[in-house]
Image (cartoon, rainbow, N blue to C red; front, side, top):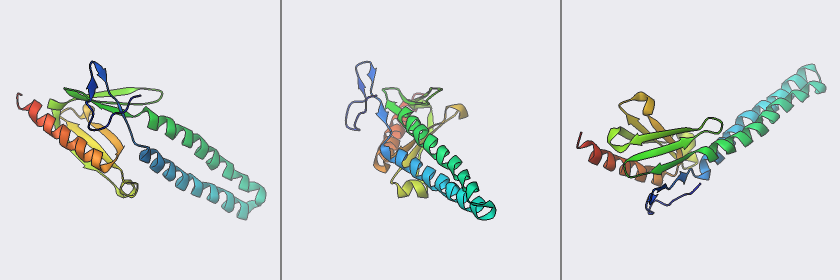
Length: 167
């Protein structure tokens, strides 16, 4: 997987230059996993342990096993996300078992928005969402640095306006 900087040319000849998502998204998702399943593990250990005896505290193993499994799955999912800006369209690729590649032509974009919820803002992340006339082709790129998200929004909006002028 190749990554490019915003200043680099987005295509090298016929080869597409892919951009990976920053590691902040993986950190955020793993932190949420630890918070939720860590809390569940503590509850699964203390409540049955207090009510039925210390042997029943072994129920804490289930959330801890889910935490370990989720930790690995989140890493694989994060590595599967990538996007590329080409001359006429934007490519978004994701998926571990079932790969999904979305191609959004610049001329078909109707709205490009940048959102950032409270947890994303805490981790200094933003999401770019593209809306087209066909609901099935709406696309999202999560976990971007806010500056990159704004740059991408401005570039996509500019290219979308230029390409849709001929329609």
